Length: 124
Image 1 (tube, rainbow, N blue to C red):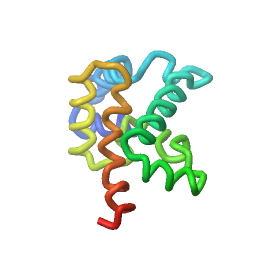
Image 2 (cartoon, rainbow, N blue to C red):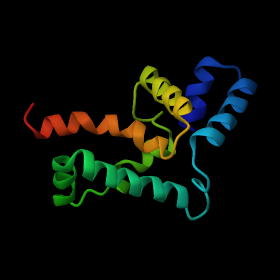
Image 3 (spheres, helix red, strand yellow):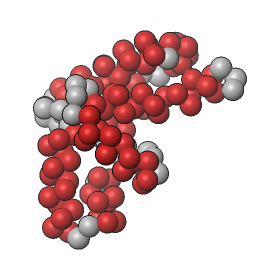
Image 4 (tube, one colour):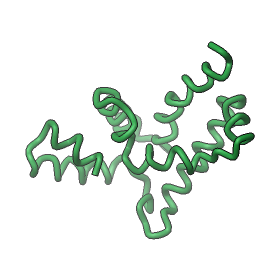
């Protein structure tokens, strides 16, 4: 829904459909939206591990309060950030993810989203 809505802001219906198809094929890992959501679950696990390595204080704070990445990051990944960022930022994330074409692109893009939380925890 959110992906299509953002695309329809800039494209006619047919172009938005084909662009959505291309985004889903290129941005989402295999089995991401399978019935068992294996791809999504794998991305969330990698995101959690990355959060622990890169932002250990933030990860510890969230864990202390039993806030798992699945509780807040699922929506980010399912909607490819279209529901949680301003449109200009969403488009920039999509652009970067398409350019990267590396392993775990969703986690690399989401890494930058956690940085403000780490600064807030540090009192800054």
